[in-house]
Length: 167
Image 1 (spheres, rainbow, N blue to C red):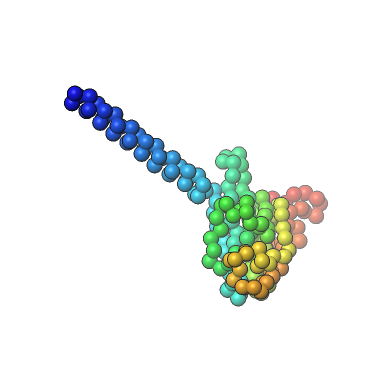
Image 2: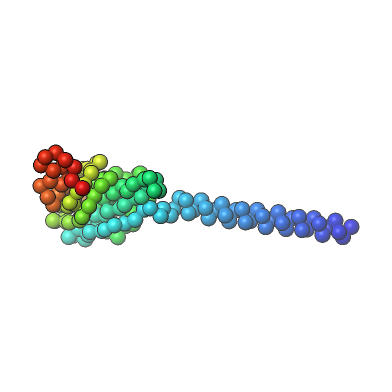
């Protein structure tokens, strides 16, 4: 009779250990896949002169060896981290698939320049206001607006005078 109990205890312990291992592995994998994106990186951050907002450039690597890099610019409350899932939820003010020698420059609290040498711009908005932040709005009930301007560093930022593509 004691050998039957021993076999039951060993089986039960093995089942519990296996289930616990599976559960820990599943939770760890789920968390890693949904919260850690190795291709997602903050490239630069510039704080507005009034200290209320940050313009944040994010790069998002996709597709492995055959993929590419997407570059986004968001305006967020100062010090806020931009998370991978926000790229899909919040609208960036700027999105490009090619961008070189880029800089985010606040000319005033209401004016942001996105300067670059070469860019393949997919999406651009020239105006943003703090109502997009909802309850995170550092302006309270007031609306803080920001004008965004493109500032190519060359007269020929993508296309050469003869119509060729500048690399």
